[in-house]
Length: 353
Image (cartoon, rainbow, N blue to C red; front, side, top):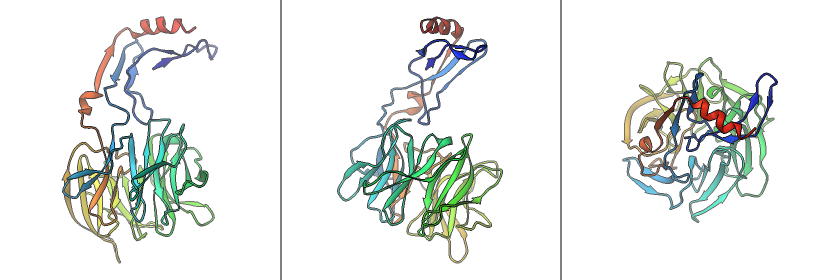
């Protein structure tokens, strides 16, 4: 943590930034775990001994058994398989230096698709595998760009933000990109853009609630998404791309929806559980039995905005992000309290004047 001397009456900086606290826990989106009271009490979460490249990609079977994809470790999140399942696009890196990597499963090789010094994430493959779309910028200010998947061209804008961030999450077989807005760190409206048309977006779901993470079904006729309209996050499904009556697919909460590419199922997560729901999509949508496939801790999840896993093309296993085998609750969750911190703060910042 740094402090910068500032004259509030003259509204100007009066010195240089100086470090005032080391070992502060910071989340991947840049949010720092501290707070200061008006009378000078500091409370903060101490960073643990968690390495920056502590995650790996693994295949997880429907019974919960796992095997590594390869031996690489990076700060992975949001892995996405291409439509034919031969490549993986995955975000990796620390906040402010996140990139999209492409992994070729057949040749066991990695390449970087996007440059560094940016926040780049949430890859979406074009149906023909020719391009990858992704968000560029902090979550609440991100725009959508795309780049050729053969590494032969520059990034091109797809949807530019007009205030809140826009996050791509899925695309239909006919090239209709589903994405959602982020306003004040909350999901809002869901929109659709036909990437082969005139570049005009239109809203599909627009309510006073937080709707996010739209996932288009393999046949392109339905869309699953997360909404808090009931007071808790649940999974809903409605027609795509025209919208219409929605159906609640989850029961007692749910986030991170993902369709089975082989058809007949919708997956979502509740804590450490992977839930499978049998569904019928033709001619009408019907929800069938829900069942827990496995309940295994140690896989990265952040149900607020994204689905941090994907499903193999035959629906028999999941591509997931495995955390290191350490106790994260103990490693990075110790709270420290410092009283009369302003005295120390004044001493440290005096040197920077």
